Length: 119
Image (cartoon, rainbow, N blue to C red; front, side):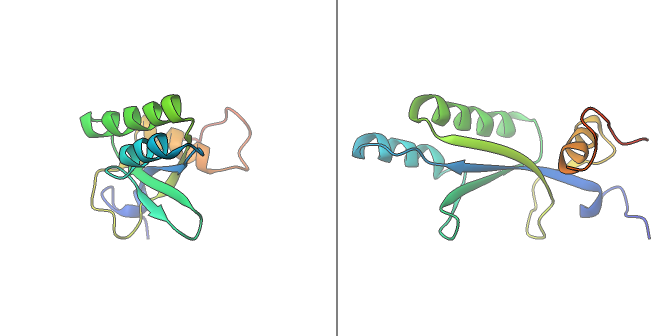
């Protein structure tokens, strides 16, 4: 069965994994204050996570906050495409879009560098 164009199987989101940088108390608190509104903390991995499903105003603001945290505090930020989680009710990048195709290629570690999927 092929997924419908609007199904979760035909879309991606970007997941930001964030590791806080060690800092003295006022800078530590500033770093956390930047992350709390946009990310959730995972005690098991001791990382923060945020998801992005569109490059709209909210998505650009999320990225800017992450870039600011990295620049000011040395916070480590990694972006990776992930399948849309079951609980996600935000926007997504459709697999058949240019961004979706790029995310799909990045999510396939066995694919040779620069080779995008055939349409």
